[in-house]
Image 1 (cartoon, rainbow, N blue to C red):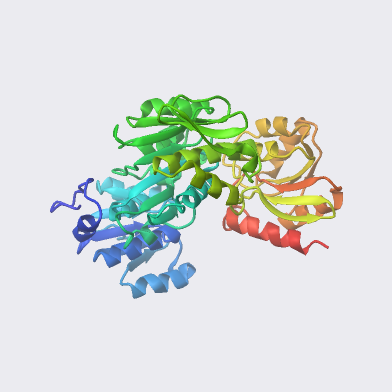
Image 2 (cartoon, rainbow, N blue to C red):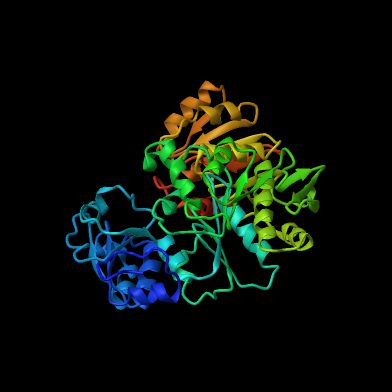
Length: 468
């Protein structure tokens, strides 16, 4: 709660924390989806809220009108003044860099700064399962939610998956289970956040343009279990070297998952089955053949989700039933259509090299790859090397298409520079032969050409459906 001096008690949760916000002055920085959810929660709790965004007021459109109707004071534009005057607390959206100029005045005044994830978690009393990793966290979060739907407790799936935690925190019952996808951007603005289960799927270089270094990115990921105790659980990928190393930093009990070897305490693949050893004996869960999702990386996602479900007390037969029903999440190696024997897949969530590598490994067919966008300072050489022998032609779009082209040409892979995603889809469609796969897996962020990876994927699907 907030003390009389404006400091934050990091322990209080639920109703007591919400009561402590009444009458306090809180500035919300960034008025996209997360910021709007935070502002709504704070106003419901009775806080005096100022919202600030680099966009001018007119650019916020309907959002501005909705917030003003709630009584939120808006201070907008790149040179806005007074946004932090008298604030007791600052709540920052994940898209706002913690050490950027926008938060400079708050840092200079020593104001407590938390993220929307932290705010939402403090407003809850329910147990939380938090899932992070460079790749696979959305699929694993969605699958874990689907598995837990097999048991009677209320389940909330939220976080980076699309629904801000703050948007659903109010009114969610204390006896429920929250499954929360958490990104490095969200984790770096946590303080008291303490999930009962923290899952780390993998760690590969990403968002280095934001974090500055791989070490800083890893440190942000490690905050997922910073407040855990030996009574909590950390689920870690034993096949990922960086994740395995990160496990040494948790105080919680570690449950391993591996598709390569059995674990003495964990979930693994053995003789073509997903199995678990958690109580001293092996329990078979389901055949790997019953996993509908393509790719070895999705087997790892299933292992992690199964570990979360077993912690919650779900029986193996219920886990098997839900795994067999689960289909790919939108924009993650999502099947779009078969056109004259050519299969089209949407992997717009492939926003980094490691993710696109996993997508390439999911297919034995010849791939016509559509890639490119905002590269976030990545090295594309590993992607080009892995594409040799798998990718028959690369169609490149966006800001970092020249860098991708140089890498692919160095690997002797034919490339075509395309001015738009539409041009790339048309070119790939003309070149594709029966038995080929046309795969959108950009290895880059979308913001140079689209509003989000979802927007990019939706445009791709519409273009593919329009092909004659």
